[in-house]
Length: 369
Image (cartoon, rainbow, N blue to C red; front, side, top):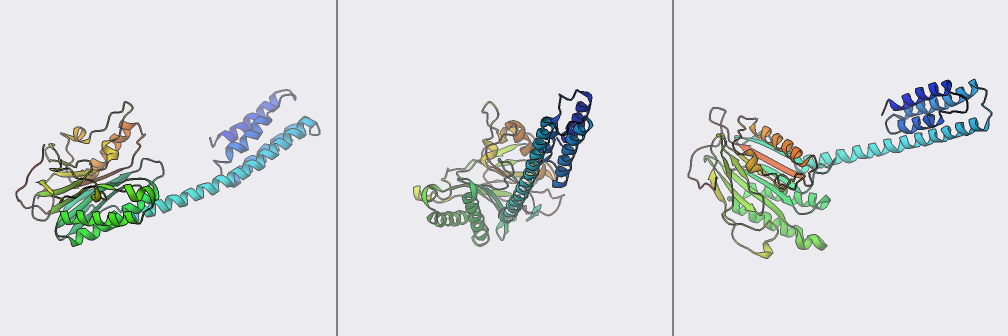
């Protein structure tokens, strides 16, 4: 496209010279500035405009037809188009600058609300990834957070109902409440209740439908120090997975289904964390429904448990490789047409040979494999 204006000018000159005077290349001379406008700088567009005008004048001067009505009409047409091309160039450049500014703001918002966790936290290998379904969007209603606490490493992955800035504001509330509660509360159950109260307070400040229906599905996890276990509370969220070092897959199904956070007024019962084995070289995968509900052209869902079973993502880079693989497979599965954002969080317990970890033993109850 950037070469097309120059090609039009060159072809137009050759065509006009090679044909009788009644044939004209004026449409090509008019099209060249318009094509250059969105792709060239202001100076480049101005040069193409000047070239078009010079070609029209020179060719008519060569044939001694500069005073003919047709020649004057062609010159006025190309001049008008040239002015429009310069205006279009300025509008496009201003829009590009505004888009770049909005993109910078979105990136800053994402770094503030959803910062990438460190690669090693509490002796565990960590990787996180956010994939926006909408082009040039950086953050929506999906969330993740990792916090190293005196009780161990605590994690959350969730999905706020809704889209837009309202969802982003709710994400900020959930993550802020989680980080505070994770540090202060002695149990994972107490952390969940703190989040429930925080969302209830947020709901009272919303108007209309959000005040009545706002909720967040979430998985809270705790990897305590000195024990080869992971504790999980699932509040209406897709089930996490544990990938064993030998390729076996464990689906962490909740013992008792629970309502999402923010829906406590519909029913109340104590949160109970399920505990499962989390041995060295195992990887915990938490994700939002942008992964498990990604559909192909036939409407078939992407099933992470079925896709990952028997596969091994070993070593400190295992979590990063796992998330990159999932993102790529979802793009292939959907044909690049994902309709929902996707937040992914992978946590791997290193082996003793790889470095210090928080392993230690302890009894556990293992959900279905």
